Image 1 (spheres, rainbow, N blue to C red):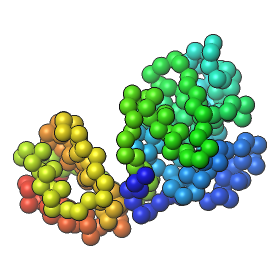
Image 2: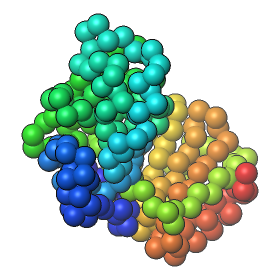
Image 3: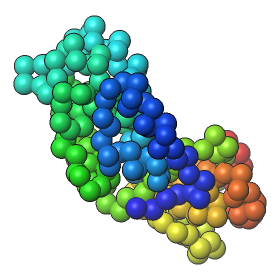
Image 4: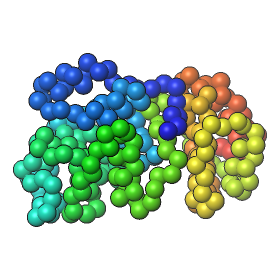
Length: 233
C-alpha cells in the first residue's frame, strides 16, 4: 500500500486501550494495528478510516432506513454500533459487540452487509467493502493520511488537460499514479505530501494537494502551472 505522505496521523495504542476499557468492546486487532501504523485518513480515495466513534450512529436507531429481516443486526443494535469510518458517499462502517465482522450501513440501499475480518490484514477487509460499494477491485491501493496542515489549491487550465498531464509527468518524478484516460489523472509525489489531480472529464480543473513539509516541492509544482497559463479558480 502506498502512503501519500510522510506525516502520518497515527493513534497511540494507549488511546485504543482506554477506549476498549471504557466501552467494554474489543476492537478488531487488524484495525487497531492499522491506526497505530498508518493512522487516520482515506483509503483508496473513498473510505475514511478514523478513531472509533460510539455516538454517531445512535440517532439512526430511531429511523427505518434499513431492512432487518435478514440483517446481521437489529434496529435497536444500530444505536449500539461503534463506527470505524465511512465512505465519502456516507456509507457507515461499524462493529457491534455481538456481531463477528465489519458491518456496512449503506446510504443508498436498505440492505445491511457484513464482512468477515481478515485476521492478517485490515486492508483486505476494506478491499472487500470497496468492491461491494463500487463494483470493482480497488487495484493498487493507497492511503492518504489526514493532516490538519494540509492545503488545497484549485487551478483552471485554458489548454488541453491531457497534454498538460503528460507534460507534468515528464517534468516531475512521481511515486504513485492513478490514471484513467477518460476521467482523471492523479499524480502522487511524496515530497509534496500529497498529489496533483487532473480532472480530465471536465477538461479544465487541476487540484494540488500538499502539506507544509512539501512547500519546496509545491513551489516548483506551482511554477510549472504558472508557466502553463493556469490560474487559481
